[in-house]
Image (cartoon, rainbow, N blue to C red; front, side, top):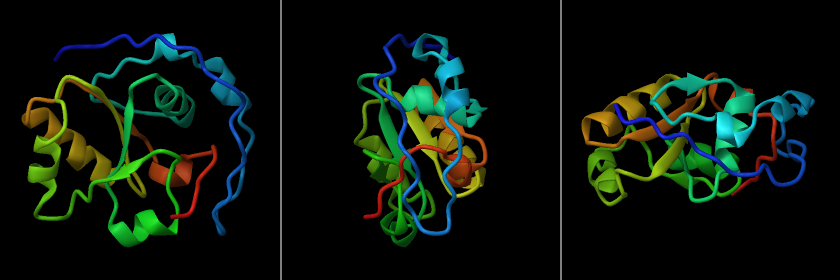
Length: 143
């Protein structure tokens, strides 16, 4: 699998969580991971690494939950491509398989399935969020 070492500066401090029911946590651990340390190798990573990946210029953040879950709150800038929809393979076929993607779901299970499907479709630069949006400590926006 082709590995991409991504270099970019983390811009600004991460903000607090704004979705009801999800608590904001300290983002001090995010400062320990630099975007240059992020490897888009298809693995699922902790919050700090995923947060650094979302700050990389040109990365596409993909929320693979249902449209209603996405509408209830999602990571800023994320696009919604429902992995459980029959149209998932068609939707990802419209994406650049050589670009960098940060993929997440609710708990990490669906994002693992999405990463596996995308890898089989020829995508080479993927990273997933271990623990899903529940592990996200940054700013979450409602749809």
